[in-house]
Image 1: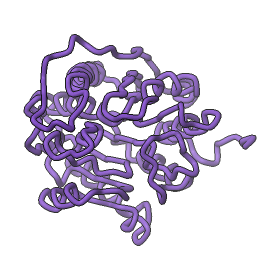
Image 2: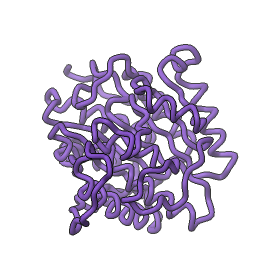
Image 3: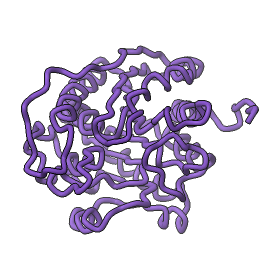
Length: 307
């Protein structure tokens, strides 16, 4: 049984559509802590993080916005995730937009480096998030975490990433929206890109099992970053970056059950939930259901729904 530690990260500054700030509260209202407890795990809720005093930093790219705020969240989250892992916990970061992964994965990487274990990253997302602060045209820093984690240049305003994760330890899974500049950069870095075409051709299971086998063989830790837009918008509308053709209810639960059976997951992000765009909390409830599967609940255990 795991001791999970919930860390609220009400981050809205990595993109321009207000609402992700309400994400941590929505997860709590949707019963995340109780769902985990019902499966026999311990739960501590460390509350929501708050921004530290902001540093006076700027970017040479005039498109970039909210850099001081995103940097503040990054440093705070890195410390908190490292603390949770150091206490033997499984941190679950309640977002907040995906810029939070700049900090959460940095904290996991710092801990893994001290523990002498390789850190692997499973990125469950419609987007590759492989821009840098220098290449982004939108200026939205939620599109940059994987580039930071993989050691791309352009992050001079940020702390050096504690232990860059080499490309062969990063798996992008469910990708279906990549712009040309990101595509060119991804080809140079040789990340495992399991886009929806790959998953349609090979199925959901085989590519994920292959990656999990690599984690297990290396004695690695596994950070999972789950974006709401990994899911098809027909079942998860509460996200500002909807891309049609995402995973179905069954596929997403299968991914989570495979992760549970692997017993490899050591930290988890839940990102980009925008409750303002939701329908009676259905996306928040689905995300809580998915965490339940990751923590050991089986699909056939589920109660009948009224909708």
